Length: 59
Image (tube, rainbow, N blue to C red; front, top):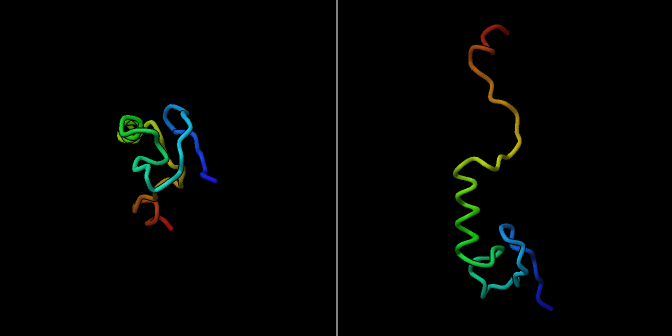
């Protein structure tokens, strides 16, 4: 049985196989749209705020 997933960009069902070179996307277009969203910082990965060297000097 072939696993099917939803394209993260358009929601179309996509077969998760080696034959699909764009997986998990359905097409190069959807892949490029997602890459553009990352480049425009529409997506972020949560994490701790960076610590400044000045903050550490007072300790």
